[in-house]
Image 1 (cartoon, helix red, strand yellow):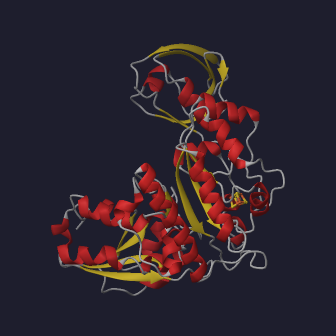
Image 2 (image 1 turned 120 degrees about the horizontal axis):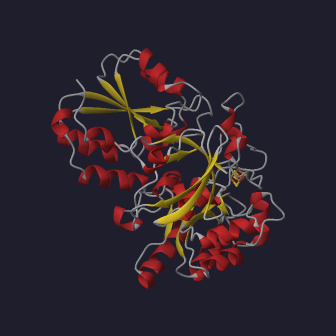
Image 3 (image 1 turned 120 degrees about the vertical axis):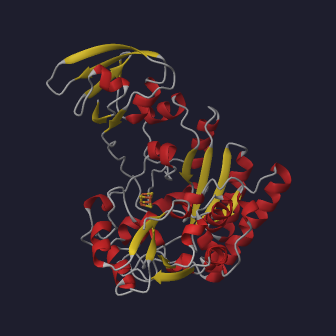
Length: 425
Ligand code: SF4
């Protein structure tokens, strides 16, 4: 059963009388478990929908609708699939106490992997899940492989019963499922020869594996430092060398890079990022792979309302990781607008200075960095540091932050979202 949480007023669902609280029970006699069932089982032009209204009345509708016309319902969020692993580098272990409960949930959900590109380990799949992945053709999936050697992978995941990943991927690949993969590199465990082997195994697997990224393990001051450490610059350089060897080979043999290092890997290695062409279709940009080059490209190619941005003083707030690369993006913007874009790198006061990503900046740190800056007309904030309710990770709201600061705040995912819109006076 799935519960409706909102109905679009001019939709088929509204015409039928579905409303907030309506329970969607089955389609063509098949019980509905979650949004995947709903989307896949209602994809046809005709189907029978069985619902229970909030007053308890059960109704069956024979639905005919033009193909592609949405039903117009929003559903309650799905119950999160809990993770079966206990990785030493798990971000949840690196959280300080006292944050919102939802942040402490270890999720590992193939449905969100398909829908949003979240990485999943596939270690918690039940036979029913396997069937659904195949029946609904959930492809591509984003899979955390980490190591193809089963013993090393089980060690990394701290899960002695984790199934072997290559046969698991093979079963899905035989049904046409494709994968983007990642290797979170934990030095001394899955770098060096293990990384070489993993990259080779995944490459040799064939065309069902669309890409493979290597991401250095990231820890906070609360992480299990007695069990895991971050890689050194030298270890990151060695990993980049392996990645680039595979990318070269793949470009020769398949005409695509296929293997990628996360921007963070290059940063830690003190190496220049590859050019934009290296990143194929930027398939793993949400995973921090090619994010800077993607941003540059996006700014260069977007029709920006640059005139509106002339002669302004704009603060650009980011984490300390991107701060090193941000001049690559801001310099051309300054040249084309004549405005001053002042980079404001913010140290993470919640997780400690080792957490350098902009997405985890707490509102309190942004407040501190921008307090009293009456010289700035506006500040661009990293959009990824806010959740859907406009809350920062420490629970501060954007509204509250705005009320305490003298300049206008613009959360931005990629600059273009703000720059292409004319500015509010
Ligand atoms: S797979 Fe590992 S890192 Fe991911 S949620 Fe589970 S324990 Fe944490």
